[in-house]
Image (tube, rainbow, N blue to C red; front, side, top):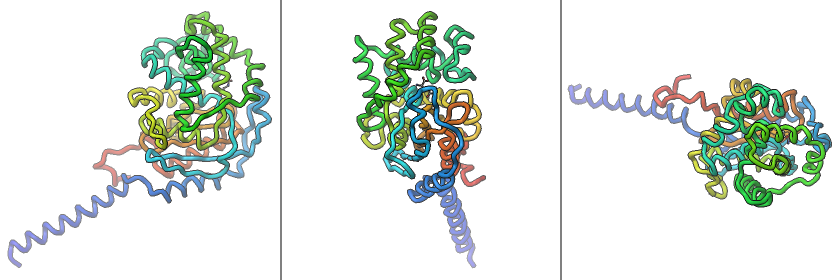
Length: 349
Ligand code: GLN
């Protein structure tokens, strides 16, 4: 063999090795196929459909009457593909999941500093309706995803009348979901009749100067916002809008500017599952938010938004099946953002 031939041979071999390596690394970093997404969603549904742990919230009487068997899963990718399993029809009240989207609105309206300077962006380590957490630092060092911070966030939405503020809330949530949402009147009435604790929380935040005026109006608007009806697909679309840099992946509307998405996700990561937020983040790495209606959303930035609706809750107030199904699906699909590897290490496990 001439030396030139050997050289060519070596070069071809090296190219071959390079091609194999490239193919392997591409496979490791490539997005899953639609079939793999659907398989993960179906498998989670099968795994947990017979799990009946936990119980409906009952401190809001209307929530105790909701069918505990409702179990729907939806996952939406930034290209607008929707993967579902189970019950997509039944709607539950959005409850605390709404807090994420009023936060997004206020960040867009007033900027990051307004939230940071008002109720703060730290986990309280306390239940969502804790009064001790308010007292500890006079309504600071909290966050917009516990009741005190959320009612205060709602109070920051500008508008001359309650109706003007409400129209901003319902428009924002509908834009995130990509369809016009509405309020479940029975849930709203039931909570409005029994929300004395939230009224007290709002008065306290007013007393400490975080709510500037009219705490009763802020509580009422917050109660209405919590009673908005959603199904699993709506919630997944809302989460996917955050996963897609603030743009709804189906309607293509830029609902909030990309600049504010990281702040929203950061607060979800620290405080989305109340006093179990650390445990959840440790397990999944996903910014998420639960509601006592049984909804749970999670965001894998740039990859997918996911949601489960299943009313029975654990002791911290988080949907039992929701947590299990989302953790399972995300681990199947490599959703944990903290597991990201530099491209050079993509083939190494
Ligand atoms: N509307 C409910 C409340 O204020 C929301 C709580 C929740 O979902 N964690 O109590």
